[in-house]
Image (tube, rainbow, N blue to C red; front, side, top):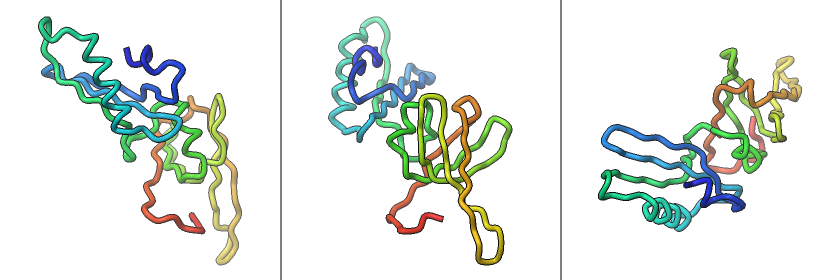
Length: 147
């Protein structure tokens, strides 16, 4: 239902969770910001297609939170320029600025110290199949220098 409603729009399904007691959580994201109105409209759409007289449920529709890991490749492009904390499938942890998000993977830039005062920028390419989890680092104040 969610994919049907969001097809061809800037919105997309980021995840669904069904918990005991028929508690349904739908998480959406967008190519641009998700509004409360977007969540309300989708909630009404889903509720119009479910029958409470057959089975009771509790539905919550919300945007993917800022502390939620990125779930699907479509979430990466809008985060270009942000810092990602990544755990690879092999268990390696990486931190860097997302500089490119393509069809098959991403490129991050990391700052590596090579001396007391010298640093170098290293580019790391990762396929989406290599990423176990990736979270956008929350920054409350824009800074000139990220590292």
